[in-house]
Image (cartoon, protein in one colour):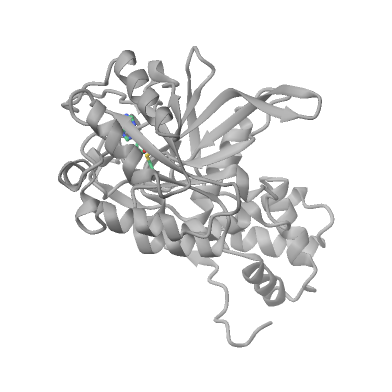
Length: 372
Ligand code: SAH
């Protein structure tokens, strides 16, 4: 055991601690040391809690009985989060995840088809994306986003971020597997940086969940210093919610722009250590009469020309009291055509799960407090 480390805190906020909240293999090694076990047990334990995702210490058959009893006494597995599921007619499934303190977040399972080029021609594969939340609510106050209306309730813990994966896996049918993970649910992931990075490390570690970082996308409204830090720490994909081509409009739609205006944001994007042949995705929500003109499209081409960028056009998904309307399909296609003419890759993201309010920007979880 490393004497420099304070002992592992066995309880958090007076409740039994979620073992998935121990933020890395070092902590697990320390725990194992404190329990008087040999250090190789840490990887065994990690395999059970992260890779296999078991929910009971009794299932960890290759651990000594005494150690299992110790673990049972001090920890729980999982954050006590439970999920209620709504199913869309298009296969999308929305999980309303209730956390131990009654806060609620949402995660969305989105099946789609992925075309992969192989030496034998194109192969169509089933892609299943899990859209994950990073915070209960959000403090970023983007004008067109339902989650923003909640304000920030609190950050999610590492265990809570990860619990979304385990809860989602339970909802998959036989033969279905999660293939992609996007932090595009509730919250601003980079505003919960320490927990996000710990969760990403567990997700991508060999001893953890073994997911390729290329299959994980972190979407941000553009918190510049944190973007730079993320890119330097772990090679996940980065998506930036742009939504406007001038500061005046972006200041209003995404107020963080007042702190990191377009020029600063795009310069930072340009400098990100992006792997060869990889590009940054810019999300652009199409708001009728607000940001969807031909001039906007031309300005977007100019802004992104110096970058390795691709653009994802998103139909605005309405919610009550939003005050915005989505652009028509024609307007979105005209916009896309101009981007393509300007040599930008531009795709249109079809709204999924609309009938269960699971589409982008529609996630809004009401808190079930004791008082109702
Ligand atoms: N906070 C992060 C991640 C969450 S949102 C971010 O800003 O990127 C995922 C995407 O959905 C963002 O691009 C967000 O701007 C967009 N979005 C928000 N509200 C929307 C709405 N009502 N319709 C369509 N997209 C929306």
